[in-house]
Figure 1 (spheres, rainbow, N blue to C red):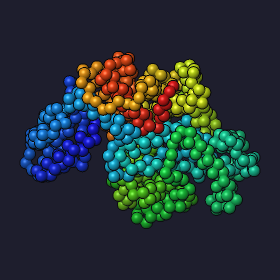
Figure 2 (cartoon, rainbow, N blue to C red; figure 1 turned 30 degrees about the vertical axis):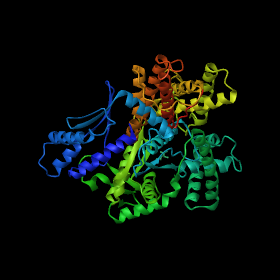
Figure 3 (cartoon, helix red, strand yellow; figure 1 turned 180 degrees about the horizontal axis):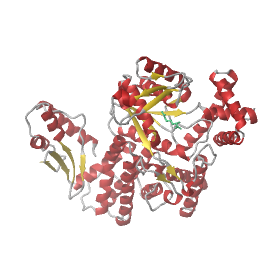
Figure 4 (tube, helix red, strand yellow; figure 1 turned 90 degrees about the vertical axis):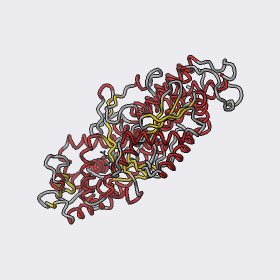
Length: 587
Ligand code: ARG
C-alpha cells in the first residue's frame, strides 16, 4: 500500500522487536484490510512467536503473538497518520480514515508516477531463461507462450525489486541443423535468405524432412554430413555459422516486434564441451556409470538416493559413442549461469513436458556437490491450442507462424479501431492497432494459470467488453480522454471532504491493491495475479465512469475526481507495462 508509512512503521517495529529480543522477520508481510467504513493494513506476529517457541522459550504461540501485537499497538498508537490502531488475535491492525486513505492513495500514485507499484530493491539476483527457439527452424505459435510468459515474469520481478538477468538459450546444434544444412548444400547452394528470413529457414527445414521421408536413400548423406560436422570440417562449420546468423537475425526481428529483450544469449553449442567434461567428472566421482562402448553413460538417481519407489529414475548423460545429449548440455549450462552471474535463483521457463528432465539434471548436480542446484526452478507452462486444432509441429511445416499471427492480430485490431474511431489519423490507427493487436496476443498467455492449457481464439482475445487486453486498454483511453478535456494541469492535492460514492471507494481500493499484487505475482511467478487485479481495476474504473460525473461536477468533487482519474490512468499503464502490453492514449 503506502511505501513510506510501511517503512516508518516497520522501523518502529524492528527497533521494538530487537529491544525485546523477539525474532525480527526478514520482511514484514502486510495484508490489506478491505473497506468497511475505513481502510487498513495488518501484519501478524505468529511467526515471531512461533520462532521464539522453537528456540526453546516456554511460550504459548497464539497468546504470545497476541501479547507482541498488543505491545506493538501501544507503540504505534502515538503515530497520528492512523485513525485507529488495534491488536486482534496476534495481528496488528492499522486503520486509515476514508478521506485520508483516499487522498494518500491518489497522492502516492501521482507522486511516484511510473514507479507506482514498484517494490523496494531486494538485493536478490534472479536469472530467467525463456523463449529458447531452435535455429534452422520456424518460430511458431508454440514458442510464443514461453517468450510472452518469460518476458512478463521478468518485467514483474524487476518492478517488484529483484535484479533480473534475461537469458535466451537457442538450439543451434543437433540433427535438425544437419538436415537443414544437407538440404541447403544439395538443393539451395548459394542462396541468400529473402526478407522473410525466419519463414524461409522454417520452409527449408520442412522441405528437408519431407525429402528425407520420401527418399530414405538420402539418409546416408545426412549421416555423412553429421560425421563431417563431428570432425569440425571447416566448410560445414563455416556454413553452420553463416546460416545460424540468418536465424538469429530473424529471431531478433521478432523480439523487436514483440518488445522483448535479452541480456544474455546462451546456445547449445556453447556448452557442449563443458557438458562432456562434467560427465567425466561425474564418472570420476562415481556418480555416473560408464557403460561404453556397449551402452551409454548413466546416472541411476533413485539408486544413488536409496529411493525404493521410482522418482528420478535414470538419467543418460552421454551416448555410447561419446556424443552429447540435451541433458549433457543442461548440466553445463546450469553451472555456467551461476558462475557468470552469482545468482540467488535460476528460473527456467520451459513447457511442462520437460519436468522430469530438469528434476533429473538438478538432482544429479546436487549429488555432485553443487549447492546452487537447489536454487534452480522450473517455471513450467502448458501448451497453447489454436482453434481448428491447427497442428504446431515444425517437422511438417504445418505451423502457424508468429509473423502470421501478429499480422492477423494487427489487421483485426485495425478493423475494430476503424469502427470505433474512424476520424483518427491513419498512422495513429496503425500505432493503436499494433498495441491492441499485440495485447490481444499476449494477454491470453498471461491470464491463465501457467499450468493450464491456453486456448487462443480471436473473439476472446479482441473482446472490448470481456476479460481481455482491449478492455483494460480502453479504460486507460477513457481516463485519458477525461484528462484531455480538463482545462489546465491536474489539480493540487486535496482531501476529499465529501461522502465518497461507492464506485469511488471501489476504484480507490483497486488502485491501492496493485503494489501488493505485483509482489504476489513476482513471488509466485504468476502474471495471472496481475492480470486479474488489472481487470478488476479496469472494471471498477468503468463503473466509476458511468456513475461519477467528473468534468461536470462542482469543486472540490471535481478536483478530487480528476486526480483520481489521473491516478487510475497511471496505475493501469504501470500494470500493462509490467505485462509487456502497451497502453494507448486513444483507441
Ligand atoms: N530448445 C529447447 C526445446 O526446444 C528448450 C530449451 C529449454 N531450456 C533448457 N535449458 N533446456 O525443447
